[in-house]
Every structure is written in C-alpha cells, then in structure tokens.
View 1 (cartoon, rainbow, N blue to C red):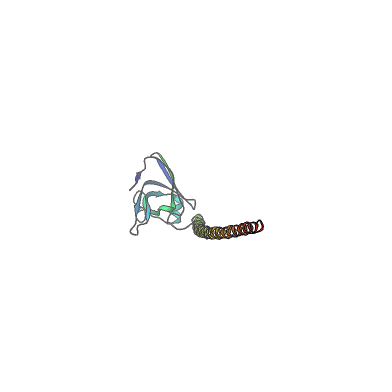
View 2 (cartoon, rainbow, N blue to C red):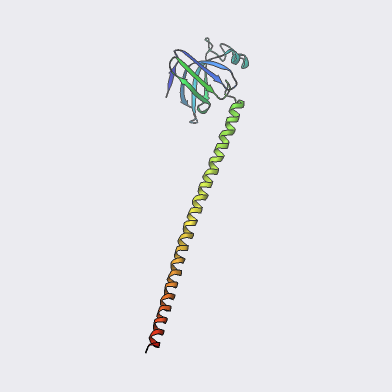
Length: 169
C-alpha cells in the first residue's frame, strides 16, 4: 500500500476547474476489490461554496476532509516531497464532468475497436488457414495431373518406340 505525506505545496485540479490542496494520499481497495485513491485534502473556496461544505460536518476542525476516488480517475502529474500535482477527471464529489464523460466515450470506442480488431484478426487467421488448405489441395491435384501427363508421355514414347521397331524389320 502506497502512502504519501505532504511537506510542501501539493494541489489537486479537478476537471471542472476547481482546486484543492492535498496533504496525504494512499492507494486502497474497497470491499468489491476496486482500486481507489484515498486523499486527505483541504478544498478550495470554490469547492466549499459549490458543495456547501461546513467545518464540523463534512470538514474537520482544520478544514480537511478524506475523499475517495476511483484509481482510473486520478492522474499523478508530479509527485515529490516538496511539490505535487494531481489531476482528477471528476468533480470534488466524484460526479462526472464533461471531460470524464467524453473520456468514457473514448474508452468505449477504444474497447469496441479492440473487439473489432480481434474479430478481424480471427477472420484473417481463418482465411490463411483456408488458403493453406486450398494450396495443399491444389498441390496434390497438380502432382496427380503431372503424374497423369508423365504416364501419357511414357505411353506415347512406348508407342513410338514400338512403332519404329515394327517398321525396321
């Protein structure tokens, strides 16, 4: 389990344009086995007013709150002891933003294209297998045809040879 404690300036920018300062973060797994980031942060004024946060209710006495975000939604841009930046695709409450919805559409498109690509690869492999069968069959047919032609040439040669022997005596 990764844990980080801040000793400098560490900020979070949310996809809706709001900011927060974070003090500690760690990776954890919820009961369903989903990977999550647990982040201790101090929300900015915009977040406090947008979500009507109050000290003693959502925030502790120092204005700090512990928030959990899906691992896939959190992007660590810079992570060192004195300076850190995190970008989160959702808003403060984990609700979708226009960016996260668009990103989800791209992810779905990529997933569908991968499925289509796998289908096409399977079709190409099947076509190659069929081509190999046809080529093998064609080779066998050609060997048979060549054998028949060789036999015909031998017979023709034998007929000429016999015909010449008959004429010479």
